[in-house]
Image (cartoon, rainbow over all chains, first blue to last red; front, side):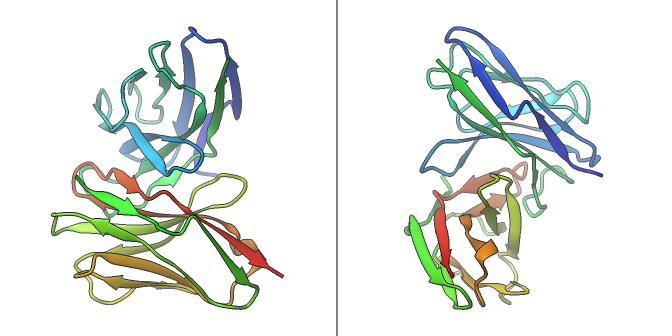
Length: 115
Length: 114
């Protein structure tokens, strides 16, 4: 089955530690995205990538880093510099670059709790 | 900056009835796309319906339809014959030809009463 996988579903970390969230897709999509969801708010874009070895900052990139070494994978690292890292993180992908009309397919998400 | 606003944090509908969720957006772009996504309790985001701004005809997908008012920058979602499985958080979103990134509204939580 084609789709997007995110692991783990729940993640717990101590404050001050970096943590990496996994996102893998087998849809052969060019573009991949990371969103953050907080209670009572919509999704906010952290980073996105339209092609391998290239990525752009979204609206809330501070305290996060990404890499895109393979088309299938777009891991997100939440660094200790992120002031409020506890949130629900969603990864998405879409078929085309530089166009806004293509559906984004979402993974099941990772709930990160930092204490 | 592009913005999307959903002014109804919560809505409720009786099973088999019709409900309309509101969404307004603000943009200076002429070419854009609008979406409604559904997020059930599983938190998996699912596309409900898509509208291209250059199309005057309102999009329809089975029981789901939109009322797209371009001049008013309004994009409401109508759910007909509501079912218990329609209970979810609904997000309105817009996208432009700048990498395809989505801009989301705050969401409307829809409950369906049996």
